[in-house]
Length: 147
Image (cartoon, rainbow, N blue to C red; front, side, top):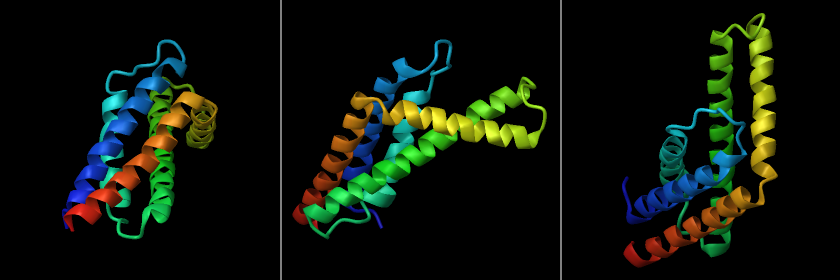
């Protein structure tokens, strides 16, 4: 059921995801195609904000912070996994793998590489952590105000 808290969380976390993606782009190897990178991550962030952060309001600000961090972890899981899958499929169509098993192992290697790049960037992680907590607290405040 649509609520003001879900709408706020979706819009706020989509914004956080967009800015974190824009901050992440310079870390990618040169020549990486990033045409829709930030926009796709913003849509993913909006979905996660609606489904996770906006749905778990009403438990207080302390629990809200953990809900925000959980939303951030889910976002990172799907963003890193999705882009690793995309890159693996691009490499597979260029016949860089000898078989499907090697392609799947290559995808997990890409997950580790992209995850490491994300987790070791203080700017990206700062935006994600602070933004996720602020989004969850904002959704909590909106829920208290309009429910």
